[in-house]
Image 1 (cartoon, rainbow, N blue to C red):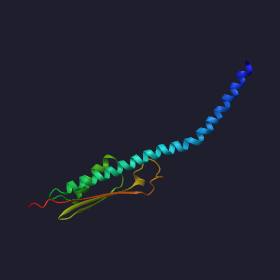
Image 2 (cartoon, rainbow, N blue to C red):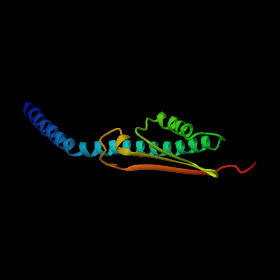
Image 3 (cartoon, helix red, strand yellow):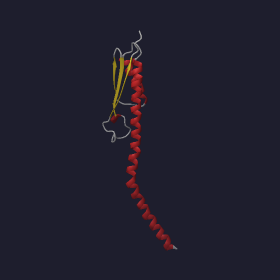
Image 4 (tube, one colour):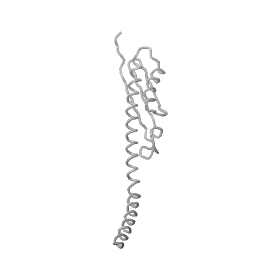
Length: 134
């Protein structure tokens, strides 16, 4: 009876060692996949917000007598909601159309170390024609 108990304890200790080795081998991959999924989600959120920001900027630019500064302010207000850092906003408010381009480097946007999307530049451009009624 005592001997069986000792053998079970030895097997249990060996199994704990195997469990530690298995965890050490699989944990880095599991953590990499988890954090990669979060980074993909963040990139998609930033990309979608940039598209919305360009749209809101163009809509603001279609209002008569709107300045480029007002368009940039409308665009930046959308980007501030999701904390897009260091965006580049370019406005082309021509006589017949309004165009807004929003660009940002993902190195500044990621939540973790930029391993997957290192130096990836996200950009969104939207152009709309102005109403020609007079």
